[in-house]
Length: 112
Length: 109
Image 1 (cartoon, each protein chain N blue to C red):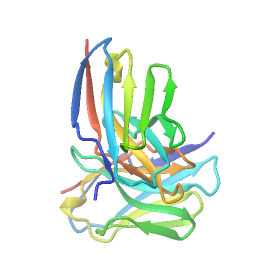
Image 2 (tube, each protein chain N blue to C red; image 1 turned 180 degrees about the horizontal axis):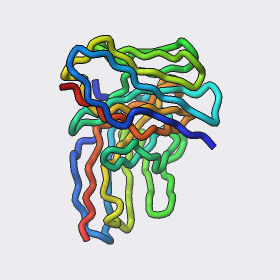
Image 3 (cartoon, one colour; image 1 turned 135 degrees about the vertical axis):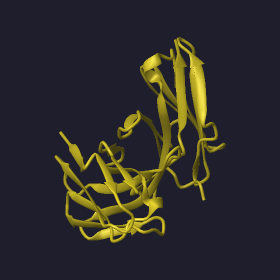
């Protein structure tokens, strides 16, 4: 049972344009959502997060939007840069904060 | 500051051999600890998590086990490896956000 879904396996974007990565979840008990970035043969690094009491959080070029009624969140990267090319994982926290559930990831390629 | 150490970075083991991967965390007390696996071309699958010494929750039935003998030490083990155990194993600690080690690439041959 996949509680966190990233339905786009890959995304290709031109440098300077906006990248939009999507994530859907099924568990209404999730209260905290995170995005991670991962390069090959390395551990994921934390990018940005959002609490369920907010609908938007911004950090520089990265903005995460949360739509609780739709159980959907998205990560916007503007402007996209070649160094943003990586796998992006969406994650959600459940069970009183003890467990992080990850999506399958989306490979982002930013073309120069 | 907190750091997480995971070793070895790569490992090639024959089928049927035992496994022991170790993870230690510094700079924090009583962290939640996790083992994840990333199979080729797939997402991060939660294998085990621990909220305290000796407390292990298993997420999926499998050929692996985990132990937490000390507060900041988390060990992933197997008595007999299978080919399907190959993958990229990641240890993480959390106090809200999760912070990952550099991972271990395990190849079972």
